Length: 385
Image 1 (spheres, one colour):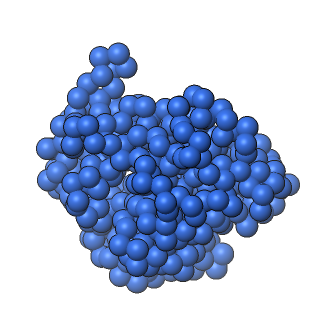
Image 2: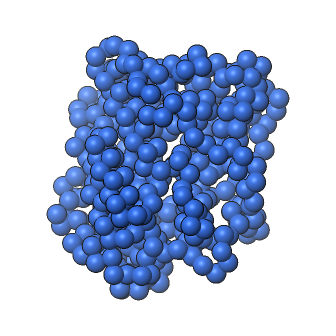
């Protein structure tokens, strides 16, 4: 999620009332994805898995991302539907019930959340809360017997991530992380170009994402809720970009904090930072993330050419080109493609692909912590395989 308004920590709590060595991406499946074009919107969507059968999704947290992106996307999905909501604000509950025809029995607050276990209309719980709350609600959703989608970053610490993974395994439920771009055609194409070495081995990657943050009271600027600043928010896209273009896990990292131009606003978290990965093949990457300036680019220089996406990580449409010409791919609703892709596998009784599971989320959180360590110490951090 990025560039969205948020309440202060006080307002938010009041409303509640309270490493693998190689990135595993199924390249062969990308070319076989079948899309259907919506003539009204001009967007494409994945073909449905089982006609007439849709999994019910309950959104936990009705902030900007749920209201403006997930809920509208669920009106376009073929394998899932908006079945329920969890909110601490009664006025939001009333609004959503009326707008999306949600029955009162499928509306919960944070105190009654665990009763969702008795609701057979809800198959999947999508946790869209501040980072510090991900662990609690993923664990509770798993204990309620529901599959879970959790927004990125998966959590603040690796220990929290492992607890989430363990809870879902114990409940025999699957856990997906909100890596929407793994279902986005332009992104899947640059994964293919890099990992299949279409232009030869990747030598250098520039992968950066940042924007100008607004409200100084938003929870993303509170370390206790976010775990950090832009690195914990949009920086994870840049980490992912370098990893999925090379298809490798980094072996070392160096990093630097930029001076703060607004020390008061960013008193609790970083404003801008940079980091550099080294990969087993010898490829290197350079990345920037920021809440002070806009940047959104994924560029790879290879032995026999180059390719890039710019814009690369936003909600679209994305745009790409290579040293041989433009990248042509269908334009999709990112959130709809992501939820449809996850639910297609659930409907088919398949194990979710490794690159969107909790284990993948854990890998990213370990890298986030290593980047902070490198910036704080000024030393190169060697990363365990």
